[in-house]
Image (cartoon, rainbow, N blue to C red; front, side, top):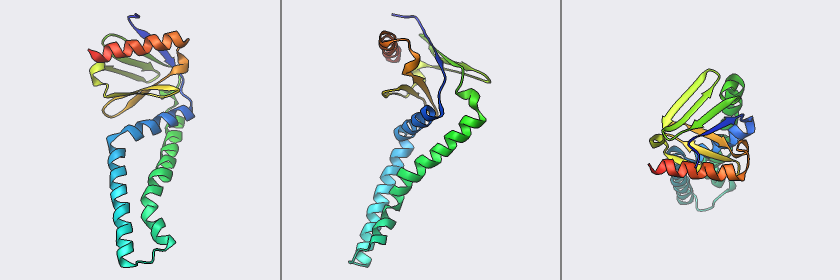
Length: 166
């Protein structure tokens, strides 16, 4: 097994946007909002039915407006924020190097440096394209395509599992 892994990163806007959506969908805040919106929607429909047993289209749309916000407006806001961040702070996404050691994760890039021990990793989310390390208030994306081959990817996953167990 390797003693460390060094992975160079160059995120595209679309990759950053996708990983940001994944991060937000995994967050406790998003889950609490989903519960709150569900309860609010059910309550609004209940009140609409009590007030007027003849349900109209606008009553249903009004009750579902919170879900419309959650699943249409929120991703759009996240997209606009991603575009803004990508354009104003491009150094966060280009020519970044992650080093994974027995101690933890170090990120080096132009104007940025980050270092956290393995114990600070709250969750790891794997998708088809990424491995996302979720911390208390932020996340870091490792693109699977930046690993040379499937064997290196499997070795990296094993390395992560071994270090998370410690």
